[in-house]
Image (cartoon, rainbow, N blue to C red; front, side):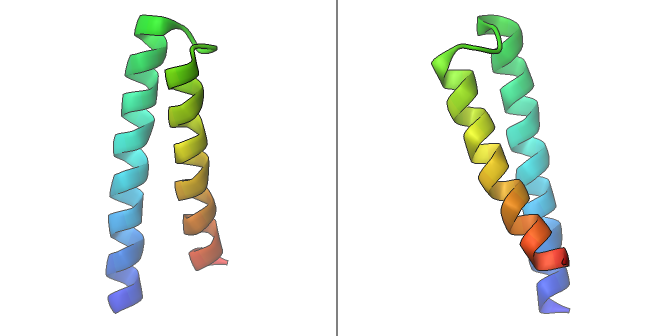
Length: 54
C-alpha cells in the first residue's frame, strides 16, 4: 500500500512538471535552456516511475 501511495505521488509530480514544461515551452520555445532543463527533470521523474512499476 505504501508503494502505491508513493507511485501516485510520483504521478502527481510528473503531471505538475509536464504542465510547467509545456507552459514554459509556449512562452520561450522548446529549445530554451529553461525548457530543456525542465524536460530533463521530467525525464528523471519518469524514469523513477518506470523503475517502480517494472
